[in-house]
Image 1 (cartoon, rainbow, N blue to C red):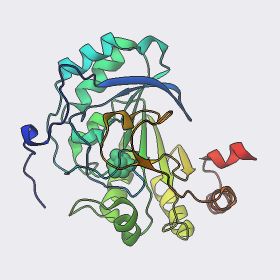
Image 2: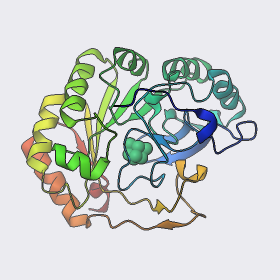
Image 3: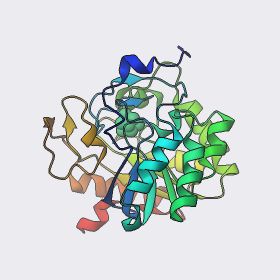
Image 4: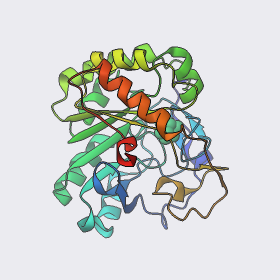
Length: 276
Ligand code: SF4
């Protein structure tokens, strides 16, 4: 696996002097109005390249932590942003936030400045690093993506960088669960290629013991290229994008029911419940 940091000059596609690392707030399904912080911002940068990613095909694939945007820049964008209208501050944006080596500093700084709760959306591929677990531990909430219950579906749905395995992610997630005192949710996106792995997903829920499991199917369009605006809510999309083929509502409902039956005591939430 390549452990060299990326040459930022070669990948940067925005002018940071005129681009904010802060966006929204946007209405979010689980947390109300969420103000986004984008620690990647220069391009789409991730250790996964999920088939349904709202950023389109990931431009820069890496699992190496480094500094992309300084903490000073992020906190000054935050001070100039619309944070007072937000219910929560969410680190997400143009890729995997734990790739940014200043993630912990920003969680602390943003929480202290706004006095709002903080949330990180992560794919868990760096959870094996004690520094990442410690920094995520500073957030009030962590939502951990888990779309695969087998190594094969990890490769098919998430298309990770070399060296990332489901076994490694799940072992690290269990370790993080034991250490973390905040609210941990698993985010499961069901698509056509993982919809038959429900039994195996139930076993992973029992192993990780999250506070909540969010079960959905992707509905946001898939952009033809990378557009900074794709990190937001996708309302009124004004760039070329293809619609996705989500699972049918009754199929998603069936998956939710099977997971509830197989994991009594777990809290399973889904947009499928809203269409009842
Ligand atoms: S983990 Fe998130 S940002 Fe990365 S490719 Fe998947 S959906 Fe996109």
